[in-house]
Amino acid sequence: MNTKKIAIAIDGPAGAGKSSISKVVANELGYLYIDTGSMYRGVTWAVLDSQIDVKDQVAVEALLPSLNLTLEPTATACKVYIKGKDVTSLIRQQQINDNVSTIASYKGVRQYLVERQQEMAAVGVILDGRDIGSVVLPNAELKIYLTASVDARAKRRWLEVQGTSNEQTLDEIKKNVVSRDEMDKNREESPLVCVEDAVVVDSSNMNFDETVAYILNLVQETINHE
Image 1 (cartoon, rainbow, N blue to C red):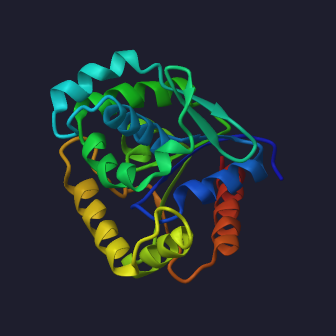
Image 2: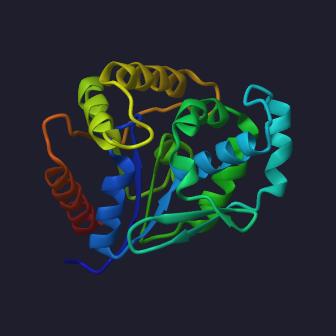
């Protein structure tokens, strides 16, 4: 494989598998993976932990300078720290799922995190989220819009939470996916968009390994054309 490294931006809706797929692709390529979603989850956890009303944008944004939010990349994921506390497992709770889109809609939150993401980003990096190709890495050599049908995304989430404390019915998860799509696409600040120069990858009929292989092939094609 060509040793040249590029910057890769992966955007897409909730439940499309961006994080899990990006981790594996980054590992295969020897790239740094930055889980931007976990950064928004970290802020959401901090807001709830501080007992701030998630709908109080002024109070939420006032909390940001004190967070000292940092990421520690590991071989398989990113650890998330708030004020030195490892919150990696805490940010996956259902309460975070229910509130993260609201927190992510605030201009101050997005500016705070985009600055941190851009500081961390260089070549040989993969970032995934909702506004990576449009806002965070507009000059990325490869932009991917990873998506899947609502039914496919809901079923994947449902299988993930079986037997966990976050267990929900398939119908509940489907409603949550649709709701998050609406919020992410219609918010004022950096909405979820598929930028013109993105390659659309619809994984509705692809399994995990097939999606990873497809994206690795896109990376190699991009490097070959650079």
